[in-house]
Length: 241
Image (cartoon, rainbow, N blue to C red; front, side, top):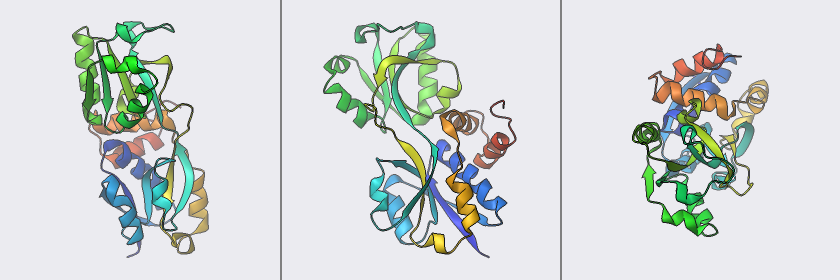
């Protein structure tokens, strides 16, 4: 039996995204299999044909995935990296680093945060906590209950942005205006093997950070399976239309 293999990073966010993409592929009469990958496994999986379509690719940071003739397609959503604070803390336009008790981030966001620290050294004064993405929501809840006031540097989409706990801070863009785009990567030669209409549909598929945060919340907090979450989104149950 013929099928297409979708590769994705092993996180709730990317698994849910892969399931959303799979629904388009299956609607075009193709069967789908999934491959969970680490970041370092992605290029080899494409090169060796173990993956036909890679979902977990953010550009320009993942440009190396195109080194061997693979093709990018579409624009699923635009990841953002901004400083946020607890909404209850009431921080406004004139916030200062001294108002915060710690700095929470993830390993994926840390390199960008460290680069910003070169021009904003006052950020180094805060105690840094590097969290796993799945630990962020619970840690922020604990901080809120304890009366802490953390500064938060976190990629969105993320499950926490499906809640109303956080507010983005003015002047807190950590990407310096550089846009990131989540795109599909087709293994070299795939275009010649599949239906062009399906690729056209994938090329115009749009999820948005809001949808992706809702999918992440459904999987990582509500305990839905990725395919169940994707179906709920498609039926308009995750976000009112």
